Length: 175
Image (cartoon, rainbow, N blue to C red):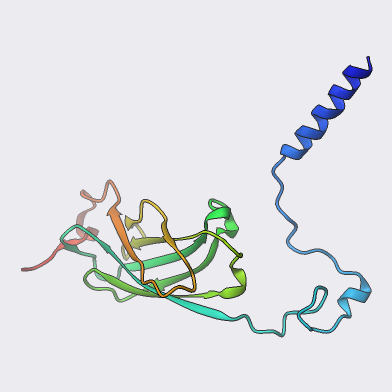
């Protein structure tokens, strides 16, 4: 009987440990902690401290020999790979308008304090037509090391189903 009880307790503990939980958005502070000065120490108010930002520059392109429709928009996102497929995965994004022929240059500004020590990050790019329909996208995340001097090249692939899209499909380049 004691063995059965011990097994049941162990199973409950293991099941509780397997539950996926996210850390709370913020934890309430005690009155003493909320009155702490903004010194950069835990418990201080950091809202007055501007976040340091950094820039990441690169280019996105595709292999097809065609121009995007006028009014197309390129979006590039810096993603935390650990948080992939969660709402908090996107650290920063940028939108490039007025694009013409590939490759499309982009500059992404991101908050340095959003990065984790030894974190793994990637870039994702999407090209949308003037109607918002997805035309080209990176099919894998492109690894990137924020803070390095690298200028990543993002290769996008055409989204299936755009061949019969009519006037909004990318138009062939002129020789």
